[in-house]
Length: 411
View 1 (cartoon, rainbow, N blue to C red):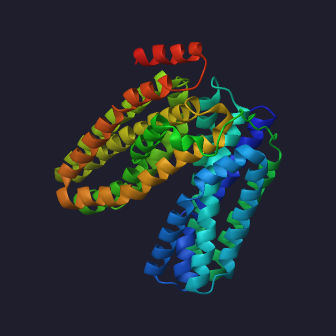
View 2 (spheres, rainbow, N blue to C red):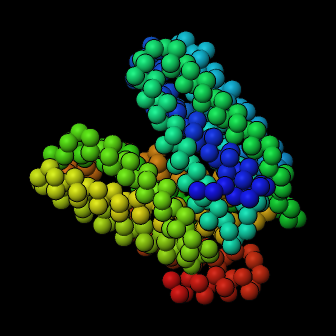
View 3 (cartoon, helix red, strand yellow):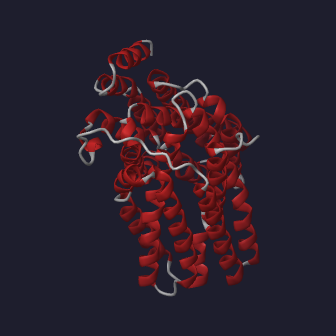
């Protein structure tokens, strides 16, 4: 894989890589640091992380608006610096109240950075290359995550407090490098249109409806991270190494095919079709998972690999469709604000997902997979009518609206 040519998109790719490298290091390392080194209980850590999620939920929309006002690059640099400092502050935690304070602030910064990053990229790309650029940076994200994970493994093998503190320091340094890369981005900002009031997106019901639908369709992540390990361990006769194998299959497929999946998604019509394909892929995945509980071990492993391949296809299609819809239907002078609202929809879906998934599987078993698959596929069919309605209400030139209508009519 080659870096983009020297310039803003290369700096953005470097930022994405080192940011995700830090995330890979801290994926489970933070939790283990607080339980094994600081000495907090698992319930205390769980409560703190839940508080951080709830607090962070309030950050996306205001910071998106702020990025539109003062410039996305300036805010992005500040947020990366704050994230690095708060991650380093993990080393100072010595009690539950201090833990709550630090992870709460870290949750704010983590959730604030996403819409600003997306708004910044919107000013660096055009509709023609935006989804492909986002797909490339998702690949960089997956590569960074996969390279950061071995550092966590080394800390676990060492098992010492020093190893975990070194892990956190390594993560903070990764974010600082991402901060330096962000500082090299051009400070472009959309020009404000006259008479626009604060939080225009909150009155844009078609866009908000799509944002909530996208949050539901983002649950493929929870299916992979929660449903797959739970199902393999509790409901199949597959060996213990199967769940890690399936996660690796997902990572390598995502790295290899993300850009190909996003290549044809360049406007509203193709984005709606991508969402619909994601629904069909999840339905096929769910039906495959539902059969594995009664299969002999070797056959179960083979079917599980097929199921995760379909789940990965859903991830690739949904992410490509989400990227295109979130930008194409946003007010161009308010990219940060609209990306903030889109991010809130994703967060709401991910917050509700674990409960819904565990309830379906623990209560219904194999039938729970069928319910999840049918629900997801039915929801995906709503992408087309919602996108059609949203495109028809955009305050754009008539020619642009006619083009969007033609694309959707052909979907």
